[in-house]
Amino acid sequence: MTSLQAPAIRQRSGIPPAWARLATALGLALHLGTASAAAAPAAGPAPKVQAVAHGLVNPWGLAFLPDGRMLVTERPGRMRIVAADGRLGPPLPGLPTVVAEGQGGLLDVVLDPKFASNRLVYWSYSEAAQPGDPADGNGTAVARARLDGAPGAERLADVQVIFRQAPKVASRLHFGSRLAFANDGRLFITLGERFTRKDDAQTLDNTLGKVVRIEADGRVPADNPLAGKPGVRPEIWSWGHRNVQGAAIHPATGELWTVEHGPQGGDELNLTQPGRNHGWPVITYGRNYGTGTRIGEGTERADVAAPIAHWVPLSIAPSGMAFLTSDRYPGWKGSLFIGALRAQALLRLELDGSKVLREERLLQNLNERIRDVRQGPDGWLYVLTDNPDGRILRLVP
Ligand SMILES: [Ca+2]
Image (tube, rainbow, N blue to C red):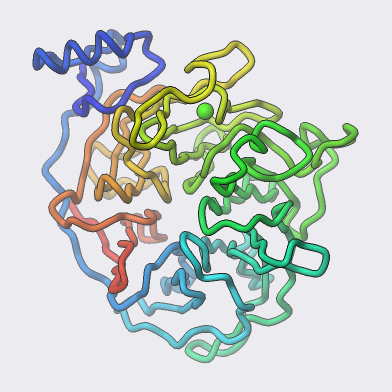
């Protein structure tokens, strides 16, 4: 038997929250009675942290180049290449302007699956109003470009915007957004509902509060779940999301896993299903800020995909996430790692298929918000810390 260490995480284990609270109050462990839980390895010693780079302003996304250097975004609107020894390259020329306000700015970055031959890089960002948009609006967009130039003198060439969230909204909040290439080469983009437009997460004529799926050049796949239906945005993969800031493709199943911010509690880890409603703001474990009053109509409904796990009563404020596939860390292979901002920790979730067996919180001694986590080509885990002197850290056992 393995216990869930943190009282804050709840799962689809059938343990009612009231029981869980009582158990926690009494100092009892929550037992998940499965054979695989019994086989779960015990927590190892805390990992050591090696500082790889510093001086990055609110770094948001990290992608490893084939040569071991790192592409890093800084939220104010810069993308740099960081050498393996931590030296920061100059901001890459060619990046379009971003709206760096509130939670917006330059956000995620990923490489094309065929980067070695086509040199294409994709990034998400908050974009100003375009012709035809409300003048005070902004919204998440995704662009791609070719990384040209000799090492140390790279630039972004032939920039193309391949996706624009619609409609643009006057808001500084809830832009999403992570990018994840599925194994078939389609691109998932996770999006927020811009905070002021939460009800739009339940309607399908917009891309607020959605996960969308597009081809790498921006076309909409003909087999998207809503393609061809009247009055809906065909890019939509799933809906009813609040602010999805983490996404990763499961290494064994190829499925899309995402993690999103709840309001006051109700952060969720989801197996994000095509053509499914994920509930927000009608079905949620989250409460209203301050007052703690209920939101929507409940926590479960037959037509709504339930989260794999959720966090109550406190939000962790989850951001980037990654599955560990390397053998670098004893007992950790197959775990899911999630960067947490409010919780100032790197969460390690031990999994059995799509069940969470237990949660461990790492790096809490740093007192830094963790914005992103990636597995490097060397098999080590790398994290970004979110502050004006943000760092890239490498974890070693
Ligand atoms: Ca949900």
